[in-house]
Length: 254
Image (cartoon, rainbow, N blue to C red; front, side):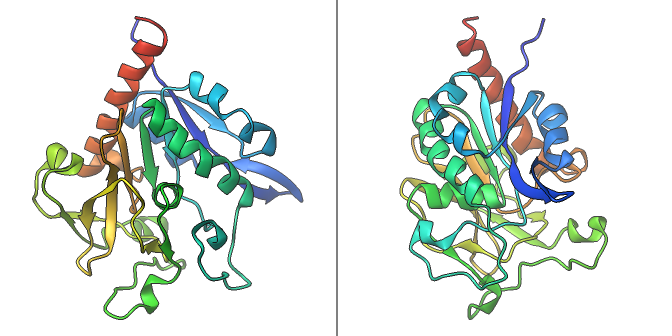
């Protein structure tokens, strides 16, 4: 029987019916099941979990850091305070930021998407632009929230892949098209991170971890969206899946 890797997806904290809930959009779960070929494990971002990260890593074969409407609290990267109406998720910050370096140190495969991409950068000592669209020379990378999902997640700009990285190995150096649904972006690059791709305005759109023991890639766009229809998106999930299966075989001693 083929071994299916366990893919940990840290959840968001969001209210529902007046009560706090752990939430992960189904598109990430489908990507973990179909695109990666794994068994998803949604991990609640609770203080009781934060104290048991090593035990969590003992039981999983990959970490998928999903996107979210919330932003990382700027005190984690010594940034200025957010505007009053900014959505934060301190519980998720408290789980993912220490989880990331420990996963990388142990060689647990990691794929970060959108917020997850920004989490990787911050966890490695980097910082973020809170409003990319207000920076001189930068484009507006935000989506139109009034548009239907097919429009919001449609191609928004070119992706220029850097030579010598994971993405070049997967799809070559040909310019790709990707979606764009973010207001924040990488400012100072985290320690040990390598630029994998940029947007036409120069904004870093993908990074990997130099000399990582396992697969460690994060992207600013959303490859989980209709990944079956896009070669780049599929290749990213497949590569992550291959790394997770290797980890699973090692973990269970096969």
